[in-house]
Image 1: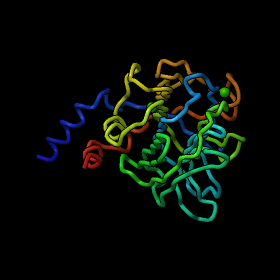
Image 2: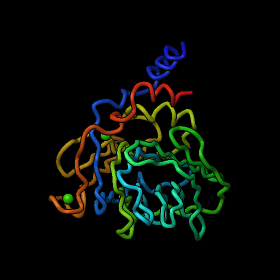
Image 3: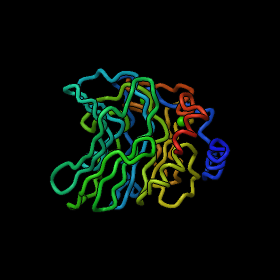
Image 4: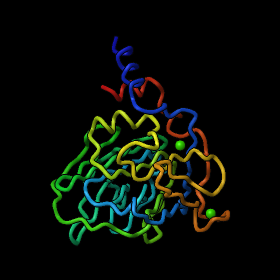
Length: 250
Ligand SMILES: [Ca+2]
Ligand SMILES: [Ca+2]
């Protein structure tokens, strides 16, 4: 009976399932710079999320899933063996962040979401609330590019796969996160500021499926270059079977 109920919940989610996915593999010096645009000049509330599958966690610094200058980030910290996954944003004159130990494993896809509505910063791991903190200093929207796979100052590169990166101009509830982490989000979804599905499978351009035009090229330039992440299949769907989807709903 539990399985029947869970499958029903999957089916009522808003988009098509994440199946037959491709994604991008970042090998330790790869990145994507998304130039800022009005849709990415966010003020609270806003939310950001990604699927991440590290191929190595041995890197001794702070590999980035994404970072937007003095704006917001998701990264992994293992500088002293801490094994921390962090989300944060720049408030007032310093970073405010929350963290959780042991959220990531090599070769395993994990969903990381952050929500900031102007007073509390929350982090969700695989749809579960993992950490939160009061955070009420003023947020100034950053005009920096949104860098996927690296630190804004060009270091701390991700080693592994990334997929389904979404930025929202609204507060996403836990139910929103849980219901949509496994499915494609329709282009006209209210509050969807930017959305990279990484479904192109070839070429230099990752398209923004939000409708806001935040397309970007791979690596350092629009031609093939050593900083290009590599198209690989299958993405998120590969390591999350139907059973793990069901498990995630309980
Ligand atoms: Ca994908
Ligand atoms: Ca390139």
